[in-house]
Image 1 (cartoon, rainbow, N blue to C red):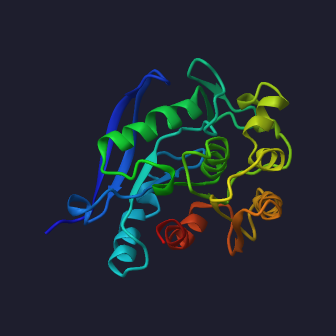
Image 2 (tube, one colour):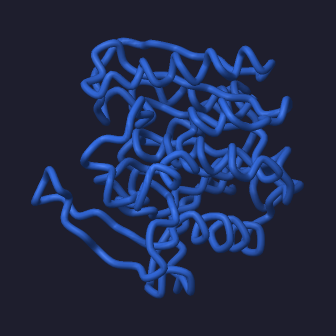
Length: 263
């Protein structure tokens, strides 16, 4: 009998010029299935691809697929390091955080790495639906920010996006300045600015949420973005759930997220 499995894919990133990894969840039906949709789920600033196991995603996806709550899907958790998923430096390097000496910032061409390497590698390696209708992206905290800017900047690639306690700043904060050499670069990646100034495809579904006690007050950024999207006729939903800005918050809501992506 087939069982679901999680594969670790190690590969050399030409864009980042180093070895890197991602975890890929394949549902029980994978070997006997037509091409499946893919959810890319991005970790926060201090995380890595192990968010797959930390959030117990395989167990929850198995149960929800078995119970018919969601359709079978492939889930990819790539390593994006502490990068915000942006193209911040032509050369991949580490830098100290200006506010936290014990936390490293990763600079490099991380948007190109995700769009030009992770997605094509997934489509080449696995039995995926190879167009935007079967391609979804979400993430937690800084990963939610990256999911949103990747979708809004590459609308031809994704049809669903989720920002889960996404690090949506209402202004450029001191700790974020190493990623952005000037305001123009910050605005280029800021999901709120992109949504306000550009056309967003009407057939992108958006899911935003944050905890009512979120220490970063990211529910404010979610509310601002949601209002802009609704005014533009985008199918956006925004939720404030109980909780802080924490792994426990994401873990307690992961089934809600899977239902959004998997229905």
